[in-house]
Amino acid sequence: MGTTRRALLIGGGGVIAGAAGLAGRRIWLDREPAALPAVDGSGRLLWQNWAATEHSYPATRLAPKSADEAAHLLRRARGPVRMVGASHSFTGLVTTDATLVSLDGMTGVLGHDAATCQASVLAGTRLYDLGPALAAIGQEMPNLPDINKQSLAGGTQTGTHGTGRAFKAVHGGIVAFDIATPRGDVLECSATSNPEVFNAARVGLGAFGVMTRYTLQNHPLQRVKKVTGLRHREELMEGWDDLVRRHRNAEFYVIPFSHYGQLITHDETDEPVRPRGPDTDTDGQMKLKMARDVFEFAAPLRFWTLDRVIADMPDQIAIDEGWKLLSNERSVRNREIEYHVPRENQIAALREVVAAIERTRSDVFIPVEVRSIAPDDAWLSPFYGRESGSIAVHTYYKDDYAFFYTLIEPILRRYGGRPHWGKLNSLKYDDFAALYPRWKDALAVREALDPEGKLLNPTLAKVLRRG
Ligand SMILES: Cc1cc2nc3c(=O)[nH]c(=O)nc-3n(C[C@H](O)[C@H](O)[C@H](O)COP(=O)(O)OP(=O)(O)OC[C@H]3O[C@@H](n4cnc5c(N)ncnc54)[C@H](O)[C@@H]3O)c2cc1C
Image 1 (cartoon, rainbow, N blue to C red):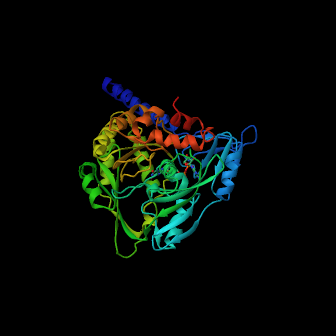
Image 2: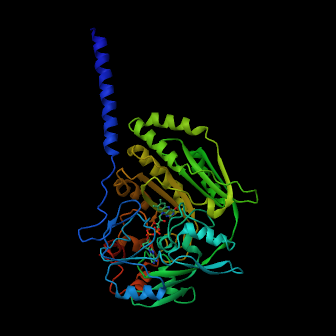
Image 3: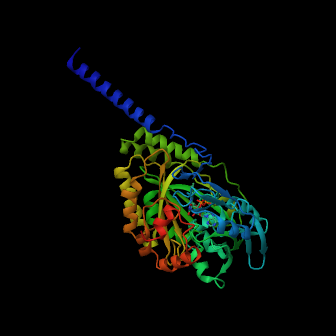
């Protein structure tokens, strides 16, 4: 055998061994994480969040049927008492080994006022039930988040938001609420009744009491046109201000390791209904994962391949009532960090985040989400007093996410970002105190309602009490 042929064979063998090694590594990394025991040694049932980042085995589970019962139970319960909605927060807001309170028994629309377009809604109502219930009375929530699995209280307590320059986060529609406090009373709160509690607890991390009922300022039911399409990502970044101005709701996703992004817009229309087709999100994300698995260590090939696959995909159009279109299915389990920066900093921050991912994190394949949110006046709202732009980075649930804290968070903090209360971050009391102008006022209200700290688990104590 000549030297050249032998060298080729050895070289070819090396390539095959290398490829097999990489495939083996990916198969190893892709194995399913071990499931936690459904019951602990004391017979307590497992509680776990959607992302499987947090869990606990609460000793007692309570499901009050009225505000008075909630107040009574709360006064007597052993702490930490934590309330749970749909368990879709990524952080440890809900964990407790003592008492878990669910409002799944307090759901539905209690009444409405057609003249003011307001509705009275029980706090445990899931957003996916609220859409059709409000539509039946000719109303809709002005805006919705990306998914509609949350409970009304669970979503609003963390400042859950959608997108749209003129639209506040979901809590922006709250004009009044009832809250059962650890002292055992029920307070009716609005801008004129208990206004301090209204301002402090509207976004309250479940740290002020059990929210039991809301009055929501809704909009008349409206048909919208949803357009989903792939665009060059430079066009999206350069044109973002214009997109935000021109569309009722605009958002986009940067597809890492491609030159493209996905733009989604919603605008009011009188055109005839064109129902949305089947959700393609899972399929799309799994294709991006496949490209990651094959080209993880060949970025130029990954760009080349994705660009070619994406370039010719046509726009998708759907026309229907907003509550049917604004939220989507997100069935690919992920981990997420999201910060809200002042809008004027958003694209500069986004460029740094995407560059950092493409420089050092070839494992990331889930698109980076970009939205805009109007300012509001809830003291603990991440959008308090400023028009905001959100940037969210996701990882697949089997992948490492420690880089959120070392790579992504420092960039977003440098641009003045406040973290989403329900999403991963590493901030503590002093950090929040510097970010929220009414921080101390809000915490004074909290301490007055819960002087014994019955509602504080370790996660909340780290945030709400100076350590
Ligand atoms: C797939 C996915 C998509 C998401 N999309 C978006 C999005 O588009 N926009 C966005 O902003 N966020 C989004 N999130 C984050 C999510 O909206 C928030 O974490 C939200 O708080 C989850 O609501 P939940 O009902 O699951 O509440 P939980 O996570 O169960 O609880 C959240 C907080 O609310 C408190 N709470 C619950 N019920 C009560 C009550 N009755 N009284 C007082 N406190 C209570 C809890 O104690 C806790 O502090 C998403 C999360 C996931 C997993």
